[in-house]
Image 1 (cartoon, rainbow, N blue to C red):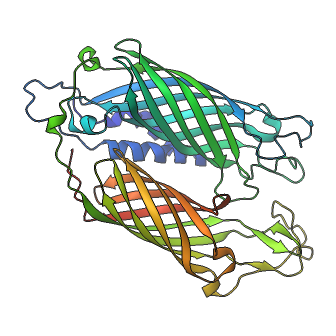
Image 2 (cartoon, one colour; image 1 turned 180 degrees about the horizontal axis):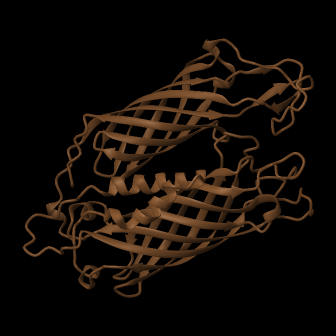
Length: 435
C-alpha cells in the first residue's frame, strides 16, 4: 500500500458537495480539500530497516458521545428566557475520520502518537426553540502526552471548525437569545482523555472536554456559548498491525534538529460588528467594518515541537473609534426607520491604524501549528486601540514555506475583537525534512 493518503476516500462525497448550492456544504468541502491536500505529502521511513512495514498510513474511524454542562456565562442561561428556567445541559455526537503514521516512519518517531483528521458532529442544547440543533464540521489533531502502560495512554486533542443551523437572535421571534447572533458560528474544542487499546482493531477513549461557539464578532450579539463535560468514544483501526502495539521506536535515527531563527510574514483580513457609545450606553452599530492586518515574526526554533519569538503587528480596523450622532438602532442592527436610528461616523485614518509588539509561542505538529500571543499597541490613535491584545492562531501548512492562517484577537483578555483570516510565508526555515 502506498504511504500516500488515498485521495479517492473523499471523491464521491466531494462531487456531491461541489454540485450543492448550500454554503455549509462548500465549507465542509474546503475542510476536506485542506486535509487531503496537506496529507497528500509522503513521509520517509527510517533508513536501515531491511523489512519496513509497507503500510504508511493507518486509517481510523471513531464515534463519540459528549454529555456536557453549559457554563452560565449569560443571563439567558441563568433563567432570563421565555420559560424562566436555567439552560444547563448539552449533548453532542461525533463521527470522526483520522489517520496516523507507521511507527517506523521518522515523523511518528518525532511526533509520537500524533493523528489528525476531519469530524462531523450534532449538538443539542435542550432548547431547540431558542438555539436550534446545529451540526459542525471540523479539523482535529491530537497526540500522546504520556504512556501510562503498554495499552493505556494519556492524550490531548483539539477541534476547530464551523457549526451550522443555529437559531440566532431576532427582535421579534427570538429576543431572549442575547448569546448567538448568527446562523453559522465557529466551533472550538479541546479535550484531555485516556486511550485504552482493546485489541488490534479497537481503542476505547474517555476524558474531559471544553467547547466554545461564537461568530468572531461578525454579527451581534456574540456573547458565545461555552460547555464542559465528558466524552466517551470507540475508535476502529482499519489497518493497524499487531506488532505495532509493542515494537519500540528507534529514536537514534531522528535527524538532529538545528536551532535557528525563521521569519513568518502574515497577511490577514476579516469583517466585524461593534458596539458604539450613544449617550451613556453602548448600542450595536448597523454596519459591518473591514479589518486588515499584517505581522512579521522572527521565531527561534528550540526543536521540532516548539518555537517562540516576537511579532511586529500592524492593524487597520475601520471599526476603531467610530462614534454616533443622534440615532438609536435595535440590537440586531435592523433600522426600519432611518429617521429613528443613529448616524455612525468614522474618525480620521490615523485613529484607526496601530502598530503593536507582541510575544509569541507556537506548538509545532505535523501539518498544523497552534500559537498564542500577547502584546500591546505601541503606536496608535488612542481610544479603542489602547490596551493589551491577545491572539490565538492555527497555521495549516501548505508547503514548507507557506501556510494558511486562521486566528482570533481578544482585547484585555476578555473582549472579543476580530477574526484573522489569511495566509503567510516562512523564510529561513531550516527544519529537517521528514518527508
